[in-house]
Length: 528
Image 1 (tube, helix red, strand yellow):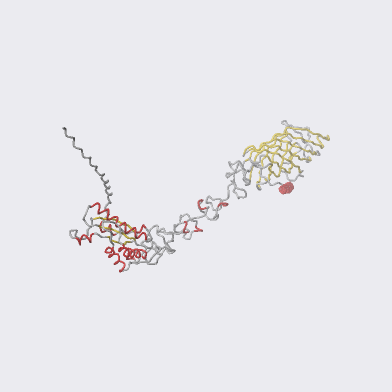
Image 2 (cartoon, rainbow, N blue to C red):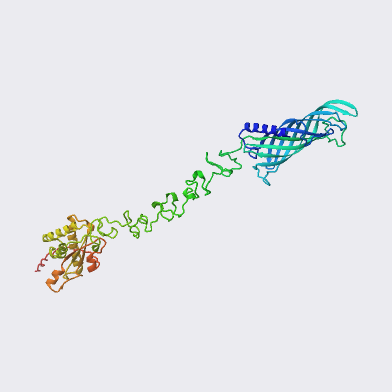
């Protein structure tokens, strides 16, 4: 037996080294070939060698071709050659007899695999099985029979129907090969292997054990569309990109178990989020921790994950003015911009491009003498009688006002014109509006932008003196000039309210046609 195991191991290692890199027989590769070394042990009329290790072992060989049917069943063709010999021992009826037989077996068998998923997995390392294989035994024997003092030599051959039953274990050495050991008994029906003429009544007195050890490899190539090494039948992730490492199910490896395969995972050693390419985000602000400058405080992606409570684009840690109103432009420290540096932030500064005190809303304060010119300008504006035409005496005053507007480009000017109560009310209202517009037109002609001057006429509705006297009426016929800052109301409207709507002028009457006198009638002649 020791010699058998040594020889079988040597044969197995030799075949393993020469085996191609194929998968063991499975549903993907259904055909397999097995090569084995074997020895036979006889039992018959001469005696029994069963499990007797003292006999001279005769080595034989075998080859099998099998086909996968199900996870628990294979169909195989088994071809084996072996040799038995026996010398009748002293005390036996055939003492002095001996024989040697060469036996060839051809059996078609069913293998019941116990690694069918019920007790053991199909890819288990140890894979026990049972084999039942009917077939034929071709026996050629020669020897000498000595019975009752009569010695007779014999030499003959015959073919018998054979029933072979065996049990074995396959060892799944790798995905490429399997080694197996097997022991079973052959029952060649009516066989007379030892050629003894004295037979048992059942004629199954001659039989033999077969002990085998060998190597099984699979043939063919499994279907593997994405070439990831996992057959399409078992591949739970078909279509894996070329070169991507996969697990036993054909799915890309995911070392950190976050559901993002390693080949797509930017952080393959840390559990993360699919939305962040497998990287973690412990504060949940959508910025991966490796790029988050404030990884423990939710923030904004544009600020590298840091918070900005007032939304001014400066992180809270760097914001020196943390409560800036929404939409206000700020500097690098988070404070509102102050372009003119006057201490009034631009969003509150009526004159953001020129410095001025906060008391004047960030605008330059007008000098006292210029304010005085505005107040006294009304005294020097005169028009032709009952017209809106400016008298030349008014020009120096208006030019002075133009200069003030040029010196203070952020200010606007309101012009309001008034009349006394003499004449028609509607006429007086139109005339006052035209006179205010005339003063405005003059100043626009000197280069002042149209959107900086507003003019209105109030007619006789806002007197400041008694219209019962000539001096009072002269005061009431006036043009006032008021400056104001952007965003402020027109001072005239503050003082007098919204200007009245100007009525349309009455149409001029058509000139009367001259009346022709009828010619004088001549007196009728007297009758004589």
